[in-house]
Image (tube, rainbow, N blue to C red; front, side, top):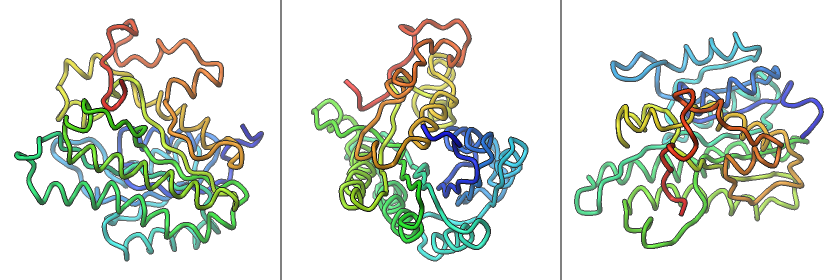
Length: 279
C-alpha cells in the first residue's frame, strides 16, 4: 500500500449512486480522493435509494471532492464528457472503476433480446469503452489502476449453464480487464477484477436474487469497499492481471475477522449466502 493512500487521486467510476460503487467511492473520499461519477440516476427511483447527486454530496461529506456527470456508459459522448470533466476539474485520471452492471438471471429461452443487449452494452462494452477513453490519462499517471467488479473466469457447466446471458456479460468484463492488464503491463497501468465469496446487501440482491432472506444472509458493501481500497492503494506494477476475491484481499492485509461486515450483526460465516460464479 502506498503511504499516502488515495489522497489527491482521481477516480472515474461508472454508476456509483448507491450500493457497492458508492461504498468504494466513500472509502476513497475518506483519504481526500476526487471522484467523478458517470451514472443515469438524475432523479429518485421509487424502488431504489439515492441519485448521482446524493452520492456526490455524500462523497463530499466524507472528505472527498465529487463531480456528478449525468450520462449513460453505453453512450460514447457521455463517456467522453465524463473523462473531459475529470481532466478539466482535477487535472487527470488515476483510477477507473468499472462498477456499472446489469443483471438478469433468466435462462436462454426466457431472456429478452433487449435485456441481453443491455447486459452486453453496459457490462462489457461499457467496461472497454470507459477504460479506453481514460487510457491516455492513466498512462500519464504514476498510480494507474483499473478495477472491474466482475468474477474470476470459471467455465464450469454449473455457471455456464445457470444464466448464460448474464454469465457471458460478467465474464466479458473480466476478459476485457485481464486483456487490458496484459496489454499495458509494461506501461504501468494495473488492471484487476474483484468479486466476493458471499452475497452483498444491495438492491440487486434484494430485488433479483432472493429478497429479505438473502439480504439478511449477506455482508455489507463496506467489505467490498475495504478490499477495493487495498487493491487501489497497491503498487500498480506489482498487482495487475489478477482476478481477486474480496475476502482473500482482506486476509492478505491482515483482516481475518469479518464478523463486523455481516448485514445482520452476529450472523455466523457459515450462515452467509454464497455468491455466484465461485465453486
